[in-house]
Length: 225
Image (tube, rainbow, N blue to C red; front, side):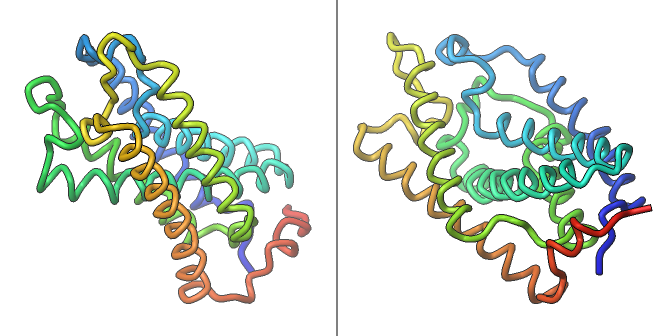
C-alpha cells in the first residue's frame, strides 16, 4: 500500500514549484497584445491550469509538514483536476503549435523562449503524471463526479471568458475561438468531453500500472508516523 507521507513526493513537489513558479512569473512579465489586454492574464486556460498545478504541489508540501489527512484528500482531488486540465492544454496546444500555430497564437505578437514554452505547456503535466503513478493513491473522484466537475468548470470558463473579453473587439485568447457563437459552443462541448476522457484514461491506466488493490480509504485512514 502506498504511503501518503512520501519523501520523494515531497522532493518532486519542491522541484516542480521551483520550475513552475518562476515560469509563471516570467510569463506574466510579457505584455499582452492590446486586443487581449483588457481581459487579463486569467483568460488563458494555460495560466489557469498552471496555477492549479502550483496549488496542488503547495498543498502536498503543507500536507506533508502537518501530516493532515484532510489536506492529503484535498491534494488528491485538486491533483485529478489539475492533471486533467494540463492534459487538455497539452493535447490541444502541442499538435496545434506544431501544425497550425495561427489557431492558438498570433505569431507576430506571441514570442516566448522555448524553455518557457516547455515549462508552462509540458513540464507541469509531466510532474503531475510522475506524482500520480509513482507516489499517490488512486484519485478519490469517481466518473460521475469527474464529469460533473468537468462540465461545471467548462461552463464557468465559458461564462468567465464572455464576461471579460473586450466587447469592442470581441477577440478571444485563442484564435480558434474567434468563430460564430454556435461553433464556439461546440468547441467548448468537445473540450469538456476530451477533459472527461483524459480523466477516465488516467484512472484506467493507474489500475493497469499500479493496480486496483490500492484502496483510497485505507490510505487516508492510515495514520502516518
